[in-house]
Length: 286
Image 1 (spheres, one colour):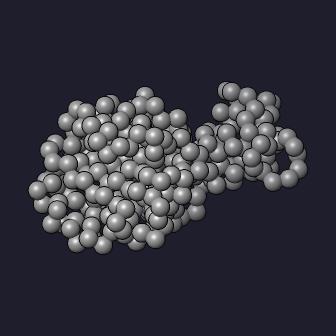
Image 2 (cartoon, helix red, strand yellow; image 1 turned 90 degrees about the vertical axis):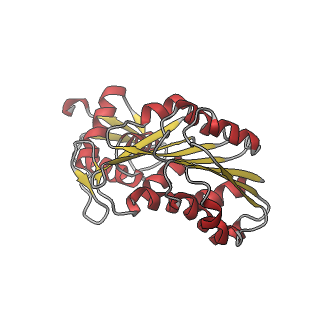
C-alpha cells in the first residue's frame, strides 16, 4: 500500500528531527478497521532508530478499531523499544468526536512536536484535524479516497502549509499539513520514492521511474507569476510542492526551462537559481 510506504519513509526522518529539537514528542496513530500495520510500522521504525531518541520522551497513541488484538500483535515489538517510549492503546471507535483531542491532552502533548497519522474513518473529522494541529510544531499525514479533497480541511484546521497528492493506481489521496518547508519537501520526496503513479496539474500520470516531464509544472509556475507578479525561487518551489504533484527539485528544472526560452527573467541574472532569486514573467509572452 502506497500510504503505508509513505508513512514508513517519512516517519524515520520526523523522529530524528523532533527528538533533536525537543525533549518530548507525541505520535498519534488514528485509523479504522483491524489492519494494525500503521501501528506496527511505527513501532518498528521507532525501534530501528532508538539510539537517536536519547534524551527525548516519546508517547505513541494508537486509536484504532480492534484494539483487543493489538497488545498481542504489538507486544513483541514494543518489548524492544527504548524505555523512554510509552505506547498507549486507546480502545473504541477512532472516529468518535473529540477522542484524539482527549488522548493528546492526556498524553501531555501540548507545547511539543506532534505527528498524526489519520487513516480511513474519521480522517476528515474537523475535531480530529484541529486536535492534530495543536502540537508545537504539528504535522498530520491524512489518507482518503480519490473523491475527497484534503487541502481545504487541513488548511481550515490551522496548518500553515498543506498539500495533497492523488494516487492514480490506487484511487486514493494523501494529504499533509505542516509548518515546515523542509518537512513539506521531505514528505513529497517520500511519496515519489514509492514509485507510485501520481496526477500532474493537467491530469497525466507522473512516475518516479520514468523521465519526468516538467512542462505542465512550468505552465503552472508561469501562470502563478502572471497572476501574482514576481516571486522568489523559494516561493515558487513552495507553490510547486503545495499545489501540484511535483517536487521542489522539479520546480528548479521547470524555471530553468522558462529562463532558457525567455518566458521569465531573473534578478540577479547570474549565480545559482535558488533562495531569494526573484523571477518575473516576461509580459509579452504571457
